[in-house]
Every structure is written in structure tokens, then in C-alpha cells.
Length: 442
Image: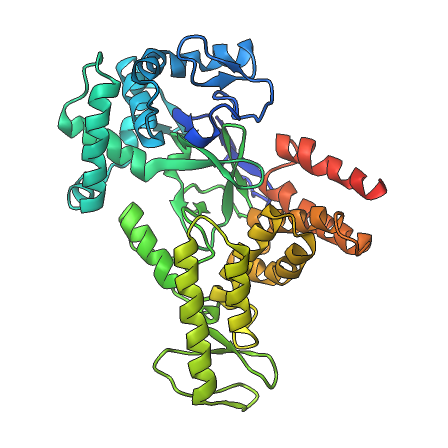
């Protein structure tokens, strides 16, 4: 773990914290595709000869990971062909580690701020009153009894404390493109508080967590460092609800107390000047800043399009369907403002599905207007904005438009952000981002 002096000014782009996980697991869907130790994608992985389940880059990676895998290796073998869920596997790793001296493992945020696993918040009281979480906890305990059948499990109170700390303090480990590849518990970074307008972002280099400042800080005051716990492409109300349900606190950040961004949540597009007009469902008419009156008929069509689009987004959930997205956008027509949250989410889904189907021209059609939406909802210096720009750069090289200058602009803008959020020394930046520029000359 690396930290900086608290006495000096911290410019944006500075790495203020590096941390390796106390416990972590790869996503079960990626077992066999990525190394269980470092999460690197590798076509020539070698399976563990003990459990024949997890795989490694090579002997060195397996040796480094053995302390984390040793306790679970025989248990994975016993329950084959069943595979524990990610939550069960992570909780089992935590239990086994604590029983082998892990409760003494310490990571320092600063010389005077040590962090052990027991220092992590469990929200025990709130957990007991959370019906969904309690049902999940009970299910995990039943599976653990079979999975760790040769291990003496902690008592129910201790088990719930471990479960609570896992739920509240887990970080989703993401690759360079911000796609989830695993879950980890990090001791020092667990001290970082939330804001929907963060001044710091968390990225990963393999399994190493990196906290990168995206706004200049006058001093390094850990009580003022803020990251976002959740996806920011969401309304104030939905973010507050998610934070309350998942982390048991009411967000009082500047963004949640302002409508500067949230006014675009349900934003109708003025047909006269294209400005956004914030509307509420009960309103039957409204007047734009240009004094153009938007009548009841337009309001009705607007809400029909919104309701239809929101319903389809709920139905699609984790799977985006190109034809459904296209129907939503056609129904939205020129009714929704380009920065409207519903339109942004549909464009996002359409962009991803176009990439999956290799419909490159369609991906450009949906991706370009998405840039302004990302800059609004995520922020101009957010890694998600950079990844969108980077994807558009790659896609433009695959289309017949021959617009290399536009592609280069997107690339340069993406790089400027990634140098702040990932750092020039990150594996993703060095091995995947920098070499892309050579493709323009091919």
C-alpha cells in the first residue's frame, strides 16, 4: 500500500493510494478465461492440479495465489461439479483467512490510521432489519456448511459480522474498460467515503486498487476524499434509494442537493429552439425559455415514450437488444432532449448491442450523441467517458467513413482522461491504449 504526505497540494491525476486485496475472487463466469491470481486474460492458462477448477498464467502466479487458494482448493474439489457462487466463495476465503491469522493483517491509510478487517463497518443492526439481505445471508450459511464441511465455522453473530463487512465494503474489481471481472475486500480503501460528485476515482491494475485524484486537492485530507460507490448514470432519487438499500446511509452530497444535472432526468425537447424543458408527470403543458408553449398533446406523447422506454429497459436488464432499443428511440423521436436520462440509457444500450452485433455504423450513430450525455451524467473526467471515446475511436477505424481526424480527436481526448484516472504506468494504458495510435497508420 502506498500513500502520500498530507502536507502538500495534490494535483489531479495523482495516485494517492495503492492497495492489494485482503480477499478477492474472480467472477465465476470468467474462470478459465482469466488467471485466478492476477485476473489477466490468457489463452494458455494452466489449471490448478488440485481442484481442476481455477487456472493460472503460470507457476509464479499460482505460487503467489496459493495462500488465498490453499484453503479452498480441497473444498472446490469436494463440491464438483457444483460451483459456489461468487459471494459464497468470497465469504469462505475471508473465513479461512481470518482463521489463519488474517485478523492481524493491517494496512495503513496513513501512519496514524491502521485498518484491519475488524475495523470495517458491518452495519449489523441495519442488516438484521434487512429482509432481503437476511435471506441471502441464511442461504449463504447453508451453502457454507456443505462447502466448508471440514472447517469449524464462526458462531452466527461472527458470521453475520463477516457477511456485513463483505456486503458493505466490497469493491467491484474492473478491467481497464471498467467491466467487472471480480470482487475484492480492500482494507485501507474501505475508509474512502462516497459522493455522487467524486473528486477521486478507483481503477484497477489487475487486482491492485488505485485511487486517482480527478480534481486538484489543496491538501491530502482523507476525510475529504470522495469516490462514488455506485453507477452515476442515474437520477438523484434512484441513487439515494440505491445507497440507502445497499449501504444504509442517506446521501447529502452537492449533486444530490442540486437539480443542475437532475433537471435533465425527464427533459422534453423544445421543437422551437431544442432547449431542454424539465417536466413533471402531472403537468399538462409548459413553457420553454424561448416562450414556446408545449401543449398537452406533446406532454402526453412525451410520457408515453418515457414509460415505454423505461419498461423496456427494465425488461432488458443485463441483456441489450438492438431491435428493442431502436423501437424505443423511434418512439422517443424528437420528444426527449438529447441529455434526457431515459434517452441516454437507451442510447447506451443501443451502442453496446451494436458493438456486440458488429454493426459499426449504427454504433457510431448511437455513440456520438452519447458523449455529451456521459459528460453530463458521469463527468468529463470520469473513466467511463474516456472508455466511450476510446470505443468510438476503434469503431471509426472499422467504418467506411475514413474520418481519421475525428477518430484521432476522440483518442486524444480519451488519453487525456485515462492519464488521470488510470495513470501512465498502468498496464491498461501502456499495453492497450498507447499502441492503438499505430492503427491509424495502417
